[in-house]
Length: 386
Image (cartoon, rainbow, N blue to C red):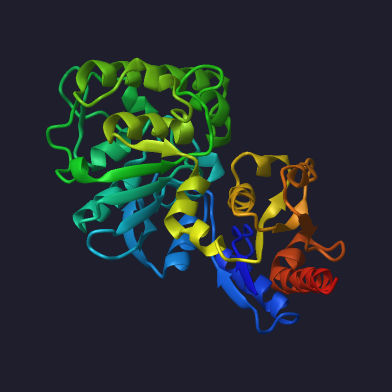
């Protein structure tokens, strides 16, 4: 019997590998001789680097970069498939330009820069990497990737031929983008962007209006941020020679991570894809499931948002395609969790055995997961005996 365990992380509690280990421990109490294949998963958001490194026995690269406020922060990214021809860098924008780096009182997206994300990309390019997966999400910035571009050698100038300042504030003064000094290895690097939002760059559903308030923007600032992004798009279309059109500003995902989606598409010729699809392809989940008898997936909370491209749904689709049953495990359920069953998942189980303080629940996640997995295994064993 082969059981594939392919969960996401349980936020603030266990990594994806930690979740998989706990599920395996519970199942082994019932099926000690089964073959277990653990495939840590992610959907392009927080935890993607660790999950993909764990799934492929990759390497974590740590370095100091420029944080969103322009001060040094300690960041990291992963390198997987480390053969010289197939090595891939996995980068999370939040690791360098994340909102968590900024104290709540200091949050001002007019001033925050994505420069550090560019430094992570540059480090990967300097190592000869020809394939980069960039996860968007959790950013403090609203600069459309201008800071990232500066770190990669793009020259962003005012009308007086002076470098623009950091943040969306700099975009308001932008007159010209020159890519002649851009990193020479960018042209040969394939960049895939894990993006799970479909917001355009500007407008009522754009980056500033939807995500600006959580980054510290008030109503007036949202208007200013939106105008800055619109101006950036105008300058991009007018001055740089790579393939780009004004229509890209309306492309689903252009508004992701404060307009970073638009920036990487236009300046780096990157392709936006659902994050879970990128992870599934990279860790070769389909191959793991091909001869499996059962698949277990999960995430910290299952609710209606799970249906929108989260890890359990990506794993479920792989199971359905290969006619392998999929069972889900969650830390807890929210509104709409039952809709997951309607999509074809065999069953879903929460792990919390009783009401308890959140800190206790998080601390006991491993044991609760293992116990729940044991119960699932016992039920599965009963079904086999029929």
